[in-house]
Length: 84
Length: 161
Image 1 (cartoon, rainbow over the protein chains, first blue to last red):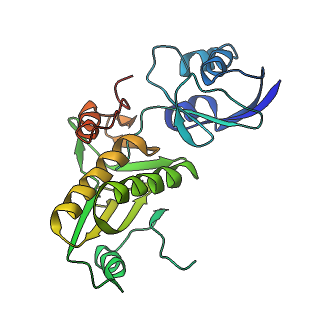
Image 2: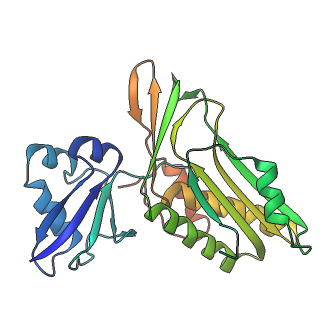
Image 3: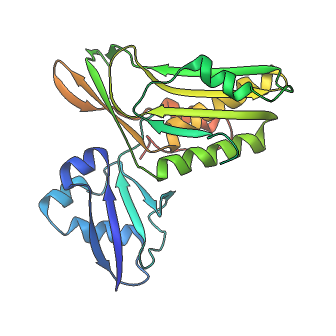
């Protein structure tokens, strides 16, 4: 198992808090992590629901859900960005 | 640090004149400066906006903007770039963002400034929350901003999924 730091921003942060540490099977993808988190609580299921517009970042770079998550990785989930 | 900072994310306001002067300083090859300043509107999507909160992803936001500046320096014949983005509580009329670009000739400064804003709108992790008479709401991403990004031949599906 790998330990990863999950971070949430904007509306996801309001629903789930700033983040949490999660144990994840070695070789798991960001998408598998999302699915694992969805199973944690009804609040997680609502905030991270499939079909909801959500972007993700691996080690502070935008990524696809197919990206593999390594030991000690930082994975963030957040809504579409709206800066500028 | 020898070179001036290219990217600053800060709650404080900024001074356009001072930033442009600093960007031009010590570079007699500059023949053009293009600068964009984004400000807070008092209305959005039919509702009055009394204030706005800007959130970012400390660390990633700065990296994302640094890499978009690298992309602009590779793509356009430009000499210097300065980006400042504010965070925290802002009110209508407040400045939000500055993108300033110097070049020898105007076309590259204009183009790079627009490229950087299109990039920032769709790729940099910032989120706006508006306070309106009907309560607070997170601002929705716009497909038009993704379309603007695609003009540069770059894929963007920030708002689409």
